[in-house]
Figure 1 (cartoon, rainbow, N blue to C red):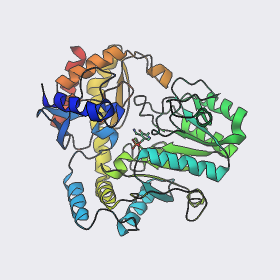
Figure 2: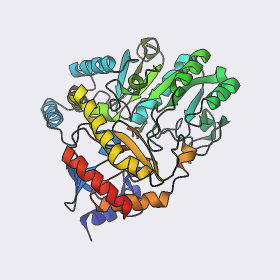
Figure 3: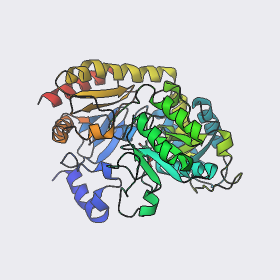
Figure 4: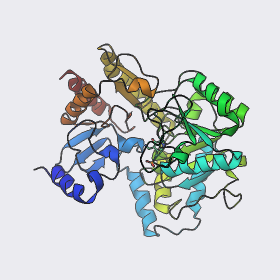
Length: 421
Ligand code: PMP
C-alpha cells in the first residue's frame, strides 16, 4: 500500500471522508487523492515522492507559486515577534492601503480569515445598509459554505430557493433567489417582481466554480444598471479572480464598479486571510462606527498579513504579463487544438477550463451537460502523467506565474497525451 493510501485510510477513521474540505476527495473522478508533502514554485511533491505540475495552486490561492522565498521569510520573521495579539498592528494598515490602492471600487476594507466569512459579512452589511432581506445569486456561482449562499443548484429562474444542503432552514434559503449566470433578462424579471425587497446581487464576475466562465459582453454593465436603479447593492465576489486577472481584479479588467467586493485566496498569500471592502458610505455601517456587527479574533492575523504584503509586493506588471503569456500558450497549443476535436474552453488570463462539451457553456445548466466520464478519464490520465488538475469539471484551472517556459512546454505535451490516450 502506498503512503497516500495508508494516510487516507487513517484519515477516514478520524476525519469525515478523510478530507478537511470536500473538493479534496476524488469522488467525481474516481481514485484516491495524493497526499501532498511539499511544493516549490510550480511543482508539487506527494508523499510517495512523485512530482506534479500544479494546475490547482490551492484553488487559485497561489499566484507566485509554492514556498516563495520572500513570503516564507516574511512569515518566519513575523512569527518571531508573536503570532497573534487581537489588537491593531502597523502592517494591517499597510495592507488595507495596498488593497484600496489596487482595487478601484474599494475605499475601505476589513480583513477576515476566509472567503466564506468575507461573503457572509458582505451580505449582512448589504442587508443592514438597505434594510432589505432578499439576496440574488447566480446558479453555479459559489461564495462559501454559509447558509445564505449555499443555495443554488437546480433552482429555477426567479423562484425562491430550496436548501442546497440539509441543515439550512427553509426560511433562510427562501431569502436567496437563484437565477442563471450571464442572463440579463432573468435579472430584469427578478427585479420586476421583487425589486424593492432585494438587498444585493452577488456574483463571481468571472465564474470559477462552474469551470471558468467569463461574463458575456454587457452583462456586468447590465447588472450595475439594474441594481443602481433599484437601490440594491452589487457585490462582486472576487475571491477567485481577484488579483489574478488584473492588478485591480476583474472590476478593473471589465471596467464595472461594484458597491462591495469580497476578496480571498491570492490576497492572503497562501495563509488564511480574506477581506471585504467597498464604498466608505457602506463600509462605515460596520461596528464600531455603525450598527452592523462583524468581528474575528484572528482577523488581520500578523502572519497572514505578512504573507499578504509579501505577495502583493511581488504582483508587478510583469507578473500579469506572465499570466497572459502562459495562458495564451496553453490556449494556442492545447485548448484550440482540443476544441477542434469536439470540446470547448474558456480562458481568462491564467484561469481556464476545458469543457467536455462541443459548444462553449455560458451558464451552469450548460456546463452540467458536459461529459463527466470523459473528464474523469482525462483527469486521471493527466494525474498519471504528473499533471495536478482540479478534480472536477466544475472547477477552473489556475496556473502560477513562476511556471517556467520549459515547464509550460512539458505541461502542454502531457495534457495533449492525456487527451489522446
Ligand atoms: N467565493 C468564491 C468565489 C470562492 O471560489 C470561494 C472558495 N473556493 C469562496 C468564496 C469561499 O472561500 P473560502 O474557501 O476561503 O471560505
